[in-house]
Image (cartoon, rainbow, N blue to C red; front, side, top):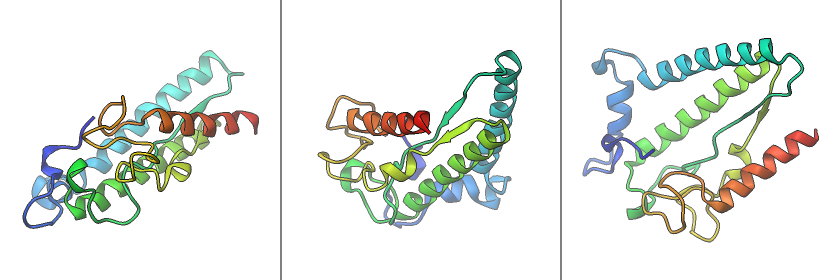
Length: 164
């Protein structure tokens, strides 16, 4: 899924996505956080149902990789986000992963962290090292989704979790 159009870099270099989805002008304090909470509630129900139907199952929840770099800045034309939105969207990915971690723990499932191993391999990294493709992919992968290298890296994180 591509970032919302509001996030694309504009002349002001502010954070239009953050302003749209987190401002008091929108009527909600933080629409993204609300969606993360709602997703967490649905995930908790699903995990409960899995536990009910398969009480002995080993369940693994795989987190999201680092899509954007740790420091704001720009990705150039490959991912032209406003610098403030780079930070905002990265924080929201971390909030989503925190929710997944909490829900996995509450359901006695295993959370698999793919964010840490993918840090430095985000969509703004050089094409030879990135795990996530920018809006203009340089490999056969969907925009703003893991490429083959990213899928391998995430699979390695899952395999390590399976061994533990």
